[in-house]
Length: 100
Image 1 (tube, rainbow, N blue to C red):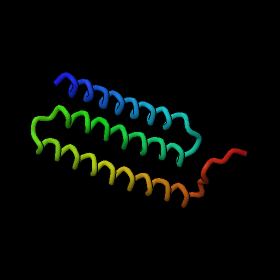
Image 2: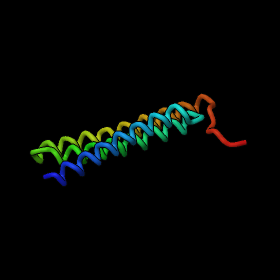
Image 3: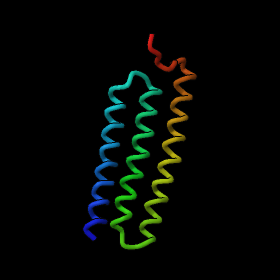
């Protein structure tokens, strides 16, 4: 039980650190496309790690299934939203940042 709790804590901590890195990337990166990439990738991975950590602590398979379905829904919705925002930015004339 101690091993499962330790692994769970490590996964949740790693997931939270990915959320922090994604937030820092949102603030520090130069253009909308880089910011979208940092936020979407880091948040999806962070949520996956948190979900796995919480699943290790859950009592029932039904709870684990709900958590996985929530994670899959977030994966689908965040990638769709990211695509729509990037397409809108391109249509408004924004171009990806390039080093000159």
